[in-house]
Length: 325
Length: 265
Image: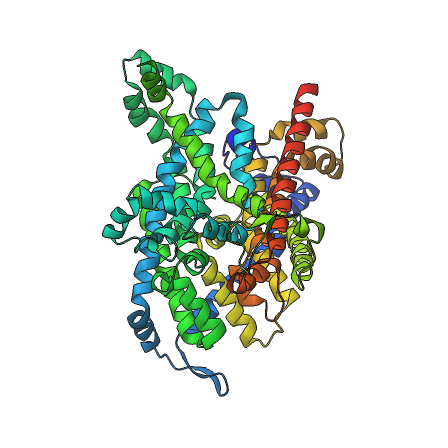
């Protein structure tokens, strides 16, 4: 998985390396049959793209546009919905569900920071310290992906169970008193508290942080560390001035890959939290599947999308990283 | 004193191992509780050891049916996304054309969109076009969100390939078809395989998007979700563990093959 990524040189297509990048300028001076072949060749990329792009346009872009229109419709399931430019739906939805919005963004931001804090040492260990264990550790990072996400989240219910060893221990050393005082747990429970939800989110999206971090750390030349040491940098200075800046593309990619899905997630909130930890995803789902209020569901997901795109744009601008795709 | 120095030198490794434990422990819990015989309906506390669930994996009604549906969808979605995604990736990696930047953006967006947004909007569209929810709507949705991941994996691989190998093949009088089948495709294969594997895992595991597009069909994640409210059967842990072990064996086999190939080269 990582081997392919490291070797990539990111050569711009059509530059001297690529065999089929002949442009219009070249074909002008060619004999007619070669010019025809060149013209046919220019069609090739469009033919290759046709199916994939059409699929995304029909099943990804069109629904988004359609959803924008649904969000300003009014009506009922029996009478049908009509576009009435009823923008009040947005206001009402925000007014009713702003706590879930704020909570979603806060929980996913905290989970992202935690993922970075605990994922970085793991990625660093795999890249520089694991030696011949590297592949085994990589496998252990990826393998949980293959056990259903829901089953693994349910396992946290066992781990954090009220009478379980973890909670008893935390209770015994009075950690829960501190966390209760901070307002992230209540009484002697961990389940059905913000702590449980953030813990689940951090757990579930950790591999999305570790993999990009590892990919960018793996590209860091080990000789740079030696050079920094030769120039009397302490290990910490070496990290701060050399390793960390070089791993920034991984930090940016990992942060986005963690924050975006976490902010829309509602599985952790539903399984590990109580009604006081509901995130905006649960609201969208219940509006859509149970209340059957499609305009509100559409407006909510449109707001969520807009907020996330805004955050992502600002973040990429500020962090200024290379092409993400 | 020496111990303190050792800890200081290996602080990063210790932190890394702890993080790894955090990642792995839930899997071990799933494994352990697949051998539990719960007292009531809830399989959250240890009662006593039993291999019942392993001997009768399909002993609960509805679960294996949902598993079959999930596997079938995952296979078709993987094939669809891999074919479409590989073609798109080749176009993006090998050609310069009008609309390339826009296409890149189009590929990136589904990965930058929360699942609930994609699921709800696609569901709304199907609903309004009065399309019957079920197998086909789930499959369409899965191909849609797997596509971008295949494109990214294959594109990275194709861009890192040495174009001189294909030129050499053509210099040696290979036809374009021969060059593609005997040089290009084998070189791109690891990227295609990575994309396909990722698609399979994503499709098989998806709950959020599927829940908006499934209608009355029940996939395995939907079964687990539904059962979580009234007590998950132990058999769910058996399936989870089996999948985990299968993945580990597959990855190990892949490593072995790759290692042997490297040794031969």
